[in-house]
Length: 183
Image (tube, rainbow, N blue to C red; front, side):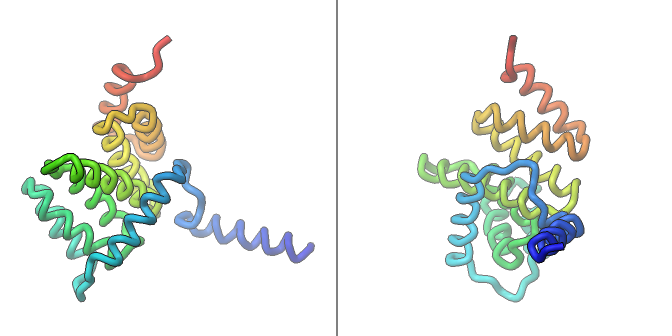
């Protein structure tokens, strides 16, 4: 066996052993680039204390459940800067940014971009099927909210292929009936 073949075999076994390193089913280079810019911006702008990311996610989820998305977003920011590989922090950021009522057009654009980029990063950082499905579900709902019908239908389908979720299935069927391809 040549050295190249051995290295290829070793790489393949490594990827098979670590699903988080394997290629995801839904790949969008534009969203990956937007996500990278978002992550770099957050690293510059958000200071990280000694507080664990899990605490910030819990606090942000509580604020979001009270309907205070503006309070949840800084918690999500702190969580993803403290632990960028944690998909829960990115999902919280996506949901919080999406739930904020924008003050003006500029803020609407920024929140929309942040929500979609964060949801895509949550999917990319997900390590298990349930985590991936939840992240794709958030991304699908964001696409639908922003009237991006084809990506919404695609991500709904991918999410449902991973884990069947009644709520997502209902949303997917409604969108497909209203905006899907018609013959």
